[in-house]
Length: 400
Ligand SMILES: Nc1ncnc2c1ncn2[C@@H]1O[C@H](COP(=O)(O)OP(=O)(O)O)[C@@H](O)[C@H]1O
Ligand SMILES: O=C(OP(=O)(O)O)[C@H](O)COP(=O)(O)O
Image 1 (tube, protein in one colour):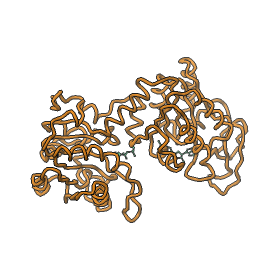
Image 2: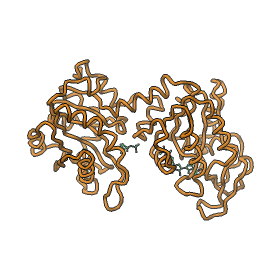
Image 3: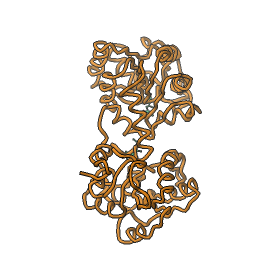
Image 4: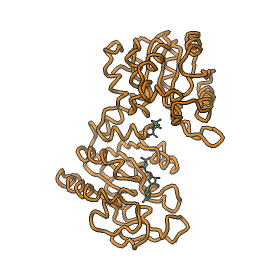
């Protein structure tokens, strides 16, 4: 795969796929612009090379029809401020007028196309739509790691029709940190997996068991493992159809010599409510009818101890219902454990990212991925379709 700095982009008009799928509040204000800031190195490099830029992105899931709530207008405004440069928002992402606007760009100018998902051809990877996108520019750069797990027209199809294609610096950073974490890690390599469900991360757990030295499980997904070992979990979130799978994973870990850690105590609540009665109990003593809401202090000590000799730590999924302050201690303590570690620390997942920011420790983590689903797909050992498409390009950046 070629990166932007290895391709002849001088003075060219480039279609750059970015992931500007940023969170908006009810008034349409951007509440977190991390994904916009993350592609600035690529944009600035291309502008310095005298390229003109046609940026394209999706925002939300507008179902193939124009819907003003999902307009990229707020993004154009924010990007313009971040680059200290005018960013024009096109009225659409394809069509005659858009084509004319693209052809009128001078070196150093930027046009942001309107939401790609206003057309159903995007998510359907429709060849005609992909060809139309490709026709807007002389070359294509994909810097949208967070959507690289989707085989969509602007991620995959478009590469078949452009004369030049490659990846941007964000893509490079994401893949290289991932490589350092899971392909050639400094050992011991420890993975921490939490969050809501075993089912959504089963593939990741199975793949991680082949790679890690230690696996630490927290969050609601730990409940299924705990129950599979014959313990009472009250009314906690649990996946009864996966009890046997959970036992099997524990057995697999043993066979592979992977050290497998489950919570030894937990914070329980009488109702799924921060104002309900709360207790800390050993995992063997969860009262019938109560809810496990967080890992307990003994588990925090155990997990922190397990991280002590780690040289690489990968984390996805919070340890408890961290959105409620009463149940955020376990997750916050794990963020601090990572932040004070000398290991290479890599975090991915929307909620995990929020937790790291909430703890004010984002500067003390080696790398926080901009992807949720894409990061999980890598943890599952999958090849990302967006990356696979770029790998089909020849050394000159042309697709075979
Ligand atoms: N013990 C628990 N009971 C219920 N929900 C939990 C528990 N622990 C964690 N969760 C929930 O899991 C969700 C995050 O899971 P997930 O989406 O897998 O994380 P990420 O987005 O980081 O991949 C959070 O909303 C959190 O409240
Ligand atoms: O925000 C995204 O994914 P994420 O929430 O898994 O990080 C990407 O922009 C992909 O969006 P999608 O899941 O609607 O395809």
